[in-house]
Length: 201
Length: 187
Image (cartoon, rainbow over all chains, first blue to last red; front, side):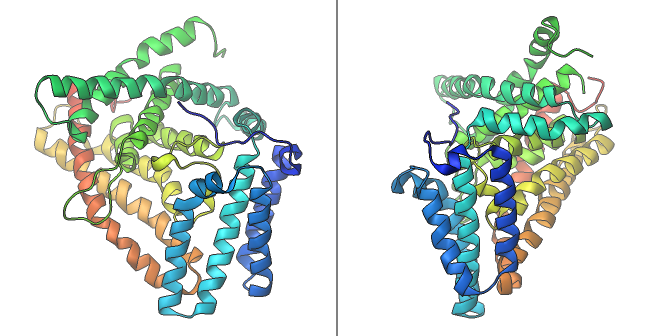
């Protein structure tokens, strides 16, 4: 049910290590926010689009994934056009769309487990301060992926129970039983995890 | 955090993902469709409390970042954090924390029903709306370039919908408190 957004392939972006991609994305974001010259921003947008398509994602899927964020970018650009100038609108549009496409390109070329490994490595130094334990974070991510289909099925059951009793399925009346039934499982799941000794202290 | 806390955080994050899979609801008198998912920060704070609520929201952000399409409408990936509305999503974490802080302080189990309702409403409005906007609007303004004032003002069209959500969160949080109280940290 929860499939990652990465696309299989062997493009240069795929072969780059995760940390390298994240550093490049961060640098690009800072540069894009500092530059407001259209002579740089337009080629940057073209380059970002090219890079995104070079991941082998296909035009339709590429658009489907970014349309919501691009729509908000368009709204912001429109506001700039209405209240300021066309030039200002173009600057904002090119800058933000380039950023969105670059970020989408990184996501499309990075597998979930590779990304998770990198995150684990990044938070391991924080363990010394006692904020968080890297193993706990991976455990939590695994639990979410494991339980989403189950909770979704439970939602369907609650909705069916409504219909069987002739009640309208309203979000609020479903929400409360869904939350209570789900969170009530926490004790059993926690016991099962502790019984297997996953979290050693 | 105990193992139970981690499981509660993960289960709540999973509930929030499921809420994003449901189709958005359109109310007659508001033009913007309401997604049940944006109830998440308010519910997380009111039901799980400050620390666990904020952790649940952080976990959702982590899932988004590593490329799972967990936000409503199947959105996910780093592109979400690059867009102009990313500030609202970061605001979820602090919003849930503040919402939980207020609920933990104000809501007592032996209170009258009315004061529990009012406390949850206050927590949802301050944490789930106030704090989330406090993060969302400056980010949006910064990303908007010169039209920062206009776009920030335009984003207020979401306020009526969010007030309705605070009301729903209040009802749900109080119902969960009656059915399976988790807010008292010792529970």
